[in-house]
Image (cartoon, rainbow, N blue to C red; front, side):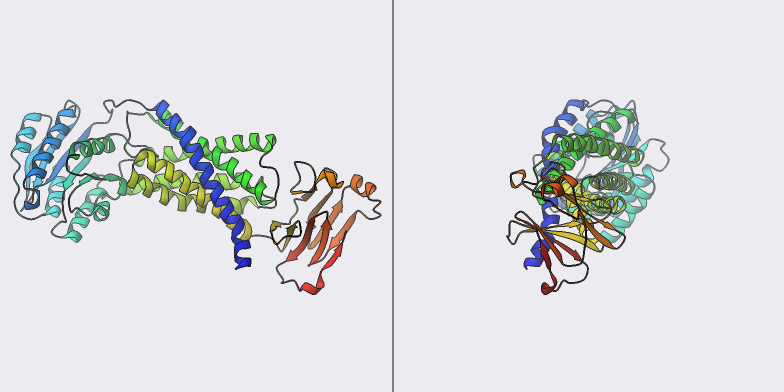
Length: 491
C-alpha cells in the first residue's frame, strides 16, 4: 500500500491541482469573458425549416396537451416567418401532417389549437413524415420533437432518426413525463439536444430548443446571438486561453510542491501565463473553426467539440515538458491529448446535464483533472532507465525525478529542482545530476567544491548509490530492484 501511495502521489497531485486551476480560471475569468462578449438574441442569418413534431398520444390528454399547445403557439409567434418556415405534425395513433412547411402562421396556430390526444406513440411514423416534409427544402432542416413517453417501437424509431440525421436533419427533443432522456439522446445523436421539461416549464424548454436550433458554440450548447466565425473563434479562443492559463499555473505549482520548492517564481508565473494563453487560444480557435461547419450535424458536432479539447490537452501537456525535468515533449503531448479526450467526455456530459454555466465550470474541473492526471502518469510510465529518488529530512516521504540529458539541479536558488537550504552552506547551484549514455553523473559546482575542499567534482553513480546533502538523501535507481545491502553513502 505504501508503494502504491507513492506511485499515485504525483498523478493525484497533478490531477487535483489541474482541476482546481481550471475551475478557478473558468469561474473567475472565463465566465466574465463570455458574459462580456455575449450577443443579445438576434435574427439568424441562416434560414431554417422546422417541423414541430408533437406527441399527441393518450398519455398527453389533459393539462400536458394544453400546456404544449401554449408552448408551441408561443414558438410560432416568436419566429420571423419572412425568413423561416414551419410545419406541424402530430403522432398519436398515427402520424398526421397537420400543416406542411409554410410561412403563414394562421394554419399553424389553427393546427396547434386543434390537437387532440388519442392512440399510442408511433414516433417512427412521425419522424419519417417529418423527414419527408423536409425532403425538398433548401433551408437548414430541423425537427423539434416533443414527447412524454416511450415510442411504440424503439428500434424502428432510432433507425428513422439515424436516417434523418444522415440527411443533415437536426433533431432537438423536448422531453417530459415518462420520456426516457437517455433513449432520446440516441434519437437526437447528442445528449445536449435533449431538453427535459417539467409541467409549468414547457415554454422555457421550447425557448431553449429554439436557441439550440438557431445558434450553437463549442462551449455554449444553447447559444445566444448570431456570431460570425471571427467573433466566435475569438470568444472561444480567449475562453480556452484563460482556462488553460489557470491549468498551466496550477500544474507548475503542483510540480514545485512535489519537489518541495517554493510555490511559484515570477519567471515561472510569466512563462505559465504566456504558455496557457497561447495554448488555449490556439486550441480553442482550432476547435471552434472545426466545430462551426458541423454544428448542425449532431455526430460531427460532438466530434468537433472533442477534437478541440484533445488539441487543448495535447498542447498543454507539450508546454508542461518545459517545467517537468526530462519529460519528453512527444510523451507529454500524448498524455495531455489523452487527458483532453477523457476530460471532453466529462465536460460534454456535465454541460448536457447541468446546463451551460454549471456544465462549463464542472466540465472545466473535469478537464483539468484528467489532463493533470494523464501528464503525470505518462511521465511516470515513460521514465528512462534511471531516476533520482529524493528522501526528505530522513522521513518516509520521497519524490522521484526522471534522470536524463537535462541536468537535475541541486542547490539553494529558485532554479534548483531539489532545494538545499542556504543556511546550511549550500550554494545557489550546488551540484547537477544527469545521464551520459548509460552512466549517471554527479557533478558538483566549482564554488561549492572549493568551499568544501573537494578534490574531485565529478562522480559516476551506480545503481543504488546514495548521497546525503544536509537533511536530504539522494538515491540513484534504475529499473532493476535495488538490494538494500548494496547502498553506498557519502557526504
